[in-house]
Length: 204
Image (tube, rainbow, N blue to C red; front, top):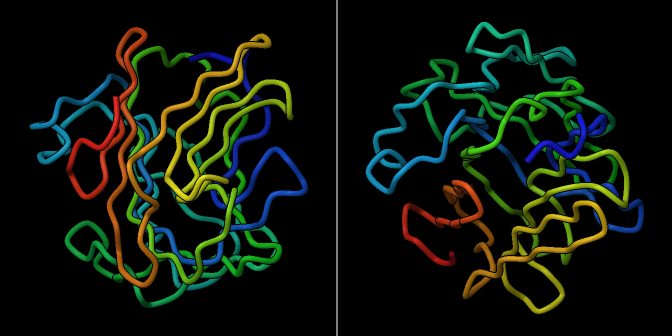
């Protein structure tokens, strides 16, 4: 997936202004070079393009732990909270809380421009089940993007891509649950996309 160097890359926000902002928390958001196998999803051992542990306690910038300099910027109602999910990689045990109204994280232009096979993972804690809210949305507007939503209009989690006028969608069997930390992972290897919820293969 290149999407011709997408310029708008968000966590918790959509390319479509009518979609809701995510109302919940995000922890340990990662983008890997290469599609991880099921065993690698568990081990999480792969070359990282982006790793946001959200270890900060205040401010509006979050550091990329890979050293690649892909920092995230907290926008609107996004803030650091001491309620993370992954303390082994994040000694502060912090996460980013998104308020469901205006909060999201802005990522640099081009972070997926050199990625073909890839894996994206994150821990997600949903406060409410909003239809169409995005865990991530990478693209250059409403005509070129890829996204993951915990709940689509049919009530199930969905990964989707709109590229050069063609839409591809992969639906899980259920929505991401509300009120607990859930690990989600999307892999793409060649033209095969796989979706994992809590380490379980749920759609491919």
